[in-house]
Image (tube, rainbow, N blue to C red; front, side):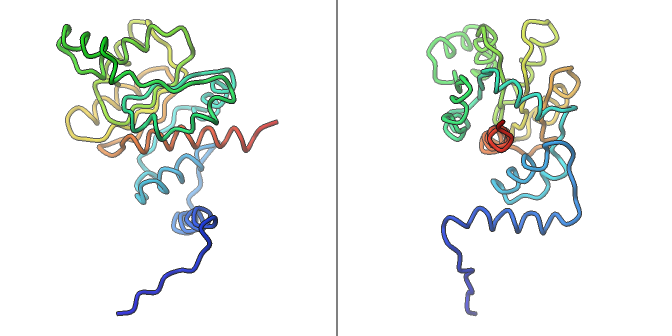
Length: 213
């Protein structure tokens, strides 16, 4: 069997990929600025289920764009997500990306309290005197701690990207976030990952560039 490869210039690969995604989505339409977020998740994962399992609170993407323009920073739960976020684009608006998972004080606090490092990371982030977007792609315990701190009125995130992947308390932690009054983008179910968390952040950053005044 002869394998036929599509001849395409390297710079055209992404454009062609999005053409294929758009074609396979057919007549599906998405409100507000959600389309690029959905398509970028599909582009990153080759999984069209993100067209159905991504849930957005009202005007979540626009609120995140506004927050970034005002200097909001992003907190992630993995170094992988941090490395995948376009830090140069975020820095244009004064924002930074944080991941505290490797910090010695976080490890010590987690051990002392008998929690995961992800939980301790959220506690550390809550002490930052900055507007924050949380991009959680791995640890459901991070979402649970965010829910608790929101309920206690100790933190008020600009946006929570809740897309941890896995089996234990993953589905439940996402549902908790959707019960809050905080803007959210959540991938319902078991699917997600650090790559999805990063690509959602990047989609929002690219939307700002596309709508720059």
